[in-house]
Image 1 (cartoon, helix red, strand yellow):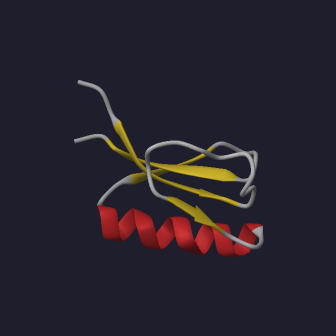
Image 2 (cartoon, rainbow, N blue to C red):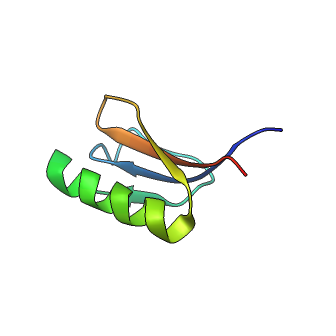
Image 3 (cartoon, rainbow, N blue to C red):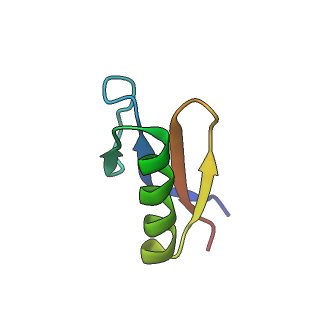
Length: 60
């Protein structure tokens, strides 16, 4: 079973692209806040890529 990327949150608006919704944050603190909220709303797991981008993945 494959996991699905359901959203992407990043501080790098010019470096993220794709078919999932993308949320741009102004700084790392806001990035973490957005990812935490999306994790709860989407019932997904947040995975920090350690480059200013967090992906939210549905493992169900």
